Length: 404
Image (cartoon, rainbow, N blue to C red; front, side, top):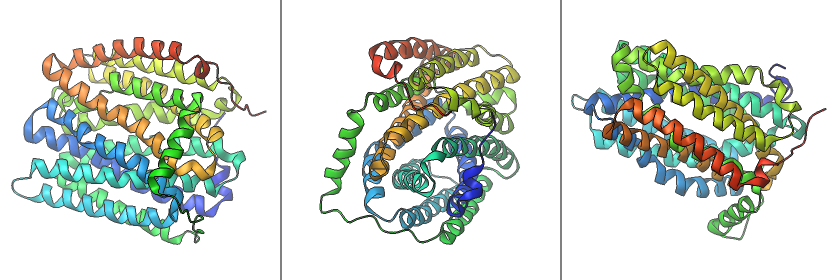
């Protein structure tokens, strides 16, 4: 019923990677609040906050594929070390910009785009390395542990970000994120040396195409990508949190809004033991996406902060339910020699949806209103999820391996 901690007990390298990335992710979630908050503070424009998503989209599309390919060609631990170093330099740039008397808005957009480019190499390498560090019998457990790490960081990080912004401004939030990169770098340095993958004579683009062809040949993988993108594009409300927070207390309220979905995610993760007994994984993903849409509609109609937080928490639980079953499908379907490339494609699916969703939310809020953007998007999402499930019958009927 509860979280399986066996991989943390049995595998030293997995333990180092897990806790190092947990601390680093905490800092990243602080910046996750600080960046849109700073843009809204400088411009008071929901549309420009939403445009942060579009600026990050091209790097996700390009480097999600290319970064995943190099995660299968290069030493994954070494690639993570280089990525962490480059990301820390970019956060340093955001920190120095925030400390200036007149922070540059274009520089924020440039640094965010560059940061997302590096993430395109970092995330596939981390996912591929994680899968290699444990036995196959623990794949479901590491999926749940990864979800717990995400949920815990996404709860504490934004709340802490709100406190830091309220106390020290966004410069204090960026400085905190910069410091957390040290923990990740030290943990990676302490891991055992990993063997280099077998050298390939083929070009990176040829291998990238091989990974893409594999993904397209698997209806169960296509379903996970499409359902997630549809749910996020039409019902992702995060770009509107800085604007929503103004009526409920400013930076502190923004921190709560950014954390709320993660609270629901954490509860779902801690109680994730039941997922091992479910075999209809495709069906579970569709149901979870539909519930996500319903709860986001509730957020749009909320006039009190506590009610908005409640619906966001429920939406986060539904999103995590979807994520848990999508993770099981990915681990059951993808061989490790393709894991880096498929992790890149996976990253495109779960990041492009929110990025496009933020752009949609910002545009609709600027054209109509914040409540219309949120509730209207949720209604469209509900119908889109049902239509997608009807168009993907093989995904709906996907029957995975069930634990005894």
